[in-house]
Length: 482
Image 1 (cartoon, rainbow, N blue to C red):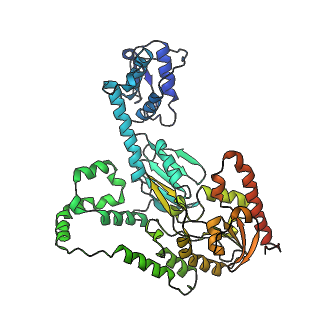
Image 2: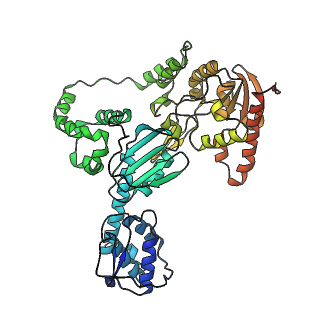
Image 3: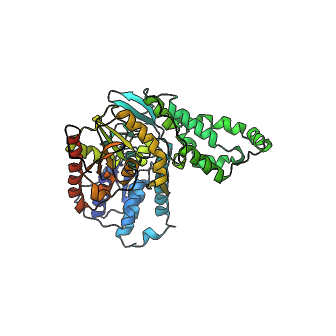
């Protein structure tokens, strides 16, 4: 019998396992004649003889099963995978469809557990805000049950692309610097840099407390959805035991309390409309303006958004860029143009000779409007009423910044600035005198992202050319359209 020693964690590269099984199959070694080990312990068994690893063709479904199962910690996972490969090679073509097969059933169980661990990682990682030598950093310590960090990390890269973060775990570290996803050594305990009770932790506690319904308490169901394995790294879990103890008395209090009558839907809409149409005096100073915007309820969009996304940039900027509305990543980070469209805008500004840090960047609508599809939030264009309700905030920003030129990025920004629909394709690249000041019209960068690859290069150059007009306009006189 031969022994194949493998690394405990093959999440980065499963090549050692694939090479070993190809050699074992080339030597025609039956499963009972070869054993795989990932514990590094000495053994009396001899190493696998050298042999040329012959090519091996397997059904597509096996590859994903293998890549998930090897992330488990079960000592027999490699032996089971080899058994299945041996049987596939020797004629059991329909094996993967045989759910009752013992070896396949155990592997499917391992894969299911790994998928669940990846899902729980996505759900239960809690970032705390701290500082390092590069500035603001969102740091988290998490303990996955299996070797799932590399499979989990791309979710956080895509979800939090606009912020720097690091996830430390006992199986490795994942970090994102807004450009590169990197992996590092394991961390056995939470870093001292992680605040014990930061603001985000308190928000999680408040959220969990307010959504906990004592009348619907089912401890088995709760621990199935939030397994105790993850509790020690969840700030909200510290209060679970006390909430369970108090559930009975809280339920009695709820039953004894008289229900408060809900306002009629039409009345709520009327209240919102009255607020949106009411004239408000200008607010003095940026702090007051931002504070008021953070609590804005001028239109219904505030109800589904994470937060108000206000503009950012120098308060005396010569150039103001106005987009449509925040996207998914902007809604989560609280900053405008940090997602894919923002990254494209940054590149185009640089190519046009404009430093983004010298421009004031904002949106015509300050809350994210979207349509939920499964776990995703799909952008939905604001309507004219929502643009109109939010115009007051944009007017305040223009009055404070007093830019020499405003760039309207797309039709929604043009509607807000011109007060009427404008054909972007016909009027782009032209500068107009408006009540808001001089306005240059061009496309929104997300328009370029939606184009077929064959058209993107040419349209990108047109976009850069439009921004170059803006660069010249803030440095000298240019022709203004009638």
